[in-house]
Image (tube, rainbow, N blue to C red; front, side, top):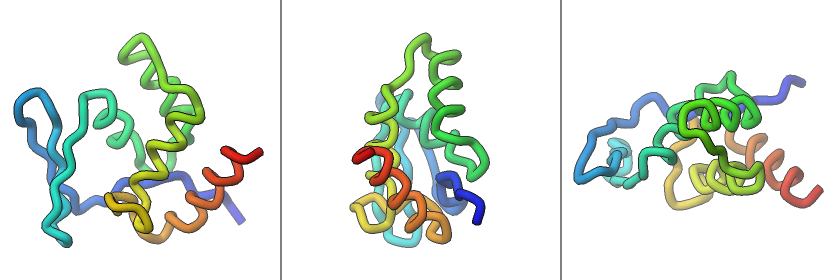
Length: 105
């Protein structure tokens, strides 16, 4: 079975306000505020890019990248069993399982 990479839901709506990127979850009517780096990382969650590739892209774009643990923790906060629920549902169980295994192992 192929490993699923994290994928941000396609129905989310973004806007910029006061130096932040605001993401609206239209199905839940919730809003989430991200800093530029957080939004960049979340926007890279396309279902095909690995977390390593996303770290490399952040390094190229911002001159610094989060540690693997920080990146995995951030992605885990976007999962449906967390408050945000911004990741696409089909991939979430496997991704959370993988992130949990990486953090432990």
